Length: 87
Image 1 (spheres, rainbow, N blue to C red):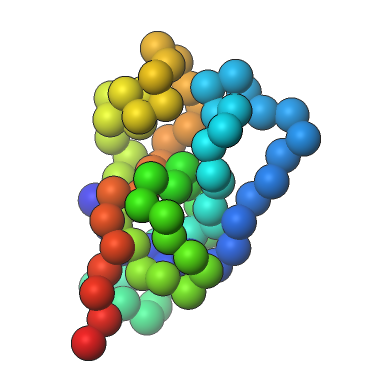
Image 2 (image 1 turned 60 degrees about the vertical axis):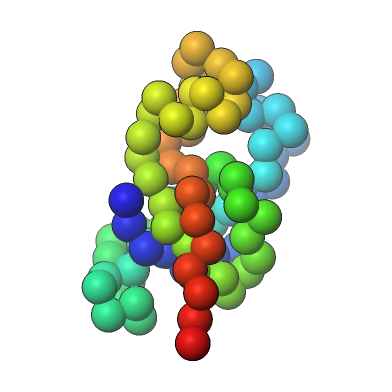
């Protein structure tokens, strides 16, 4: 699990069958300070109705993602699993 900030959305005219109907987000993984980038932006499947600018928890748990997408195989790696409240 890792913190990330939503920096955009991704659209595709052609998707892998497991991703049809899934909302795709562009997320920037963050360091523990919640500000510094930790690597390159990634594509994540949205499961929590996140919006651009939100801080979320992402996971690379493939089993969870396959269950969410109801697919035995998917090329997706990351998914959102929680919204982070900010004081």
